[in-house]
Image (cartoon, rainbow, N blue to C red; front, side, top):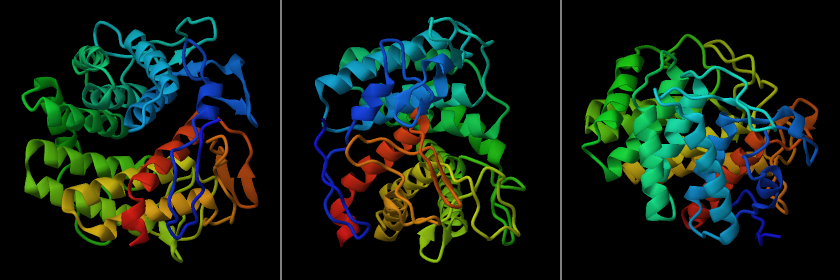
Length: 349
């Protein structure tokens, strides 16, 4: 079992995340999407969305182990197989290993581009970094009409441009998102769409990352404005109260359910990115609030992570939680745990 040191919401030191449940959900093909409580449900198969999230988590872990290396290889191999020659990607795969959908450029494509971009810079070995970049370049032939998919892809493109600033495909993806989002809005509702739905932290982070990648101060400022807007809208009475599955509009202020852990993880990522760009420690409040949400400082006063196994629970409900521990929620908990540990000293200060 992976060693872990629990933390309180006030910032006691964290140890390395526990990756036991992540390994439990994974077989030689990929990571299974669903679980019944802690038990894997292989009949539902795999999805590229979750495999891409899993690759992101394992390559971001600074303390690499043999187990994490095996997991990274499994996830990268899955993504390589999912991205077709024309750059579109399959999402759904059965337990037999067969793809069950047509390839496309929905959110799953964007998340694959994101994971491949990060792995291009952060994978543990030169060979894995080269493989990730080859698959990234293949996927970068495509674009998406959807904001979320384009934002996810832009996060991968920004990661590539940090190590390969002349990468044409990455540059095109970053500029495409900037054009899609457009200039900052005026008034109280600053969000680039009429409603916040899902992945809001990732969209805000992507605008910020794209601005940094192309060196445009006005886009950077817009990204920071959007990160602040998300934090303000998703915080109530000193705790995160994230948008539920019905979405949030300008007049929606009450707590919403079913709150998804992935929304909390996206806010943590966006806040950490804002801190890295500005160096201003107040941004780390977003990381602190996100980890506190997982520990139980949320609208249902319920812990959403198992610190022993690293499992995340599938949704926060008005009277508690969904006790299933699927891939998406587990990866959201682990991603936030990584950031909370990374910034432990600053959070205590």
